[in-house]
Image (cartoon, rainbow, N blue to C red):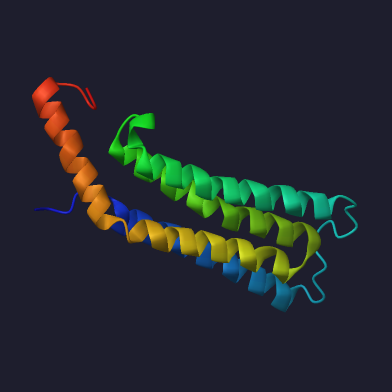
Length: 147
């Protein structure tokens, strides 16, 4: 059976993007000494940090729901693409917090959350293949996706 999931290239691109964010953080720390962020005096940074942490956790929840209930979206392929997108977004939130406040600790927990989520998604290779085969079978039987 041919592995049909786009996870290879998409997964590498998503993980690579997180490491590019790491590079941005470390280059800012190295070359913009002292790097205090672009808006270090922002009064509501703590609130923003909490809100983005909650959104990051919600992103994990969305990825889980979409992967375990792919009928909620157009197709299995869309479910996995959506999962990759929402699993990379916490790293983007962390990068934004770092750039605003200049604290590495604002970035790395978010990046770790993204990498753990992407690793779990990568481990779903068998599930992807099962869902794709089921979707293909439904299409052949009914002429419609998830008909």
